[in-house]
Length: 267
Image 1: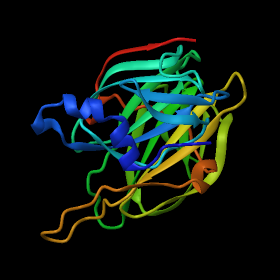
Image 2 (image 1 turned 90 degrees about the vertical axis):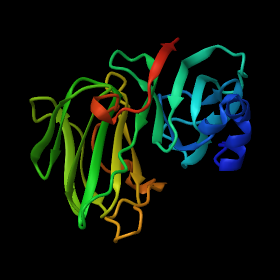
Image 3 (image 1 turned 45 degrees about the horizontal axis):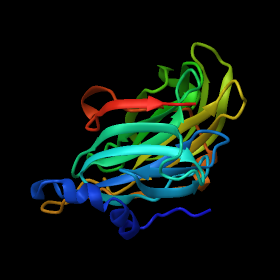
C-alpha cells in the first residue's frame, strides 16, 4: 500500500489550490484523513491531484500541513484515475487556516458513502484533565456510550459527535444500542492522557456485521505556563484502534469551522 503522508508531497499535490489563493490566505491547516468505508481500497484526489493511493479501510493518515482554502475532494476505486467514477465526492470543502481537521470517508446512517470534515477541538485543558470525543460514522442506529458502566452519552446518531473533559486516567467503555443493554462494541479499557483529545470513531455497517473502531489522539493541550503558548500537535495510536466506543461526525454547534457547500455521493 502506498500512502502519501509527508507534508512536502501533499503540499506539491495541492499546489494549484495554493496558487489560486490570495497571499493573505496562504496559511496552513492540519489535516488528517480516515477511511471508514468497508471493503473498498480507494484513491483520493484533491482539486484533481492525487492525494492518497491504495488507501485501505480503517487507515488513519498522519497529520499534514495543507494551505488553507477550498478543495474539491474525490474518492475513486483504486487505479481508476482522476477521471474515474467517484465513489464519493465533496466539492468546495473549506479548510480554514489554523484549524485541526479530520476528513472522514464513511457510510451514512442508510449505508451510502459520504465525506464528512470534522474540526478537532484543540483548546487548552486544565492540569490533570483530558478530553474525549466520540463520533458516530457508522451505518448503525443510535447508540449510548457508557463509561465505567454508566451512560456518559445517550442517543448518539450518525453523523453527530459528543465530547467531554475528564480527569486523565483509564476508563472502561462500551457502546450499546440506545436505551438498551445490548452491547454493540466493547467493553475495553481506554487510557485518556493528560493534555490530549482522544477521538474515537465508529465506522462500518451494523447490517454487514463489520463495525470497527479508529482512534485519533490530538496532543499538546496542557495548560501553558505564563507566556508559553499551548501546542496543538496530532498523533495516531494504532494499538488503541481496537479499544472502545462508537462515534460520530462534528458539524454541530459552534465547533464547526469547516463548511460543506455541496457534497454528493454515488454508489
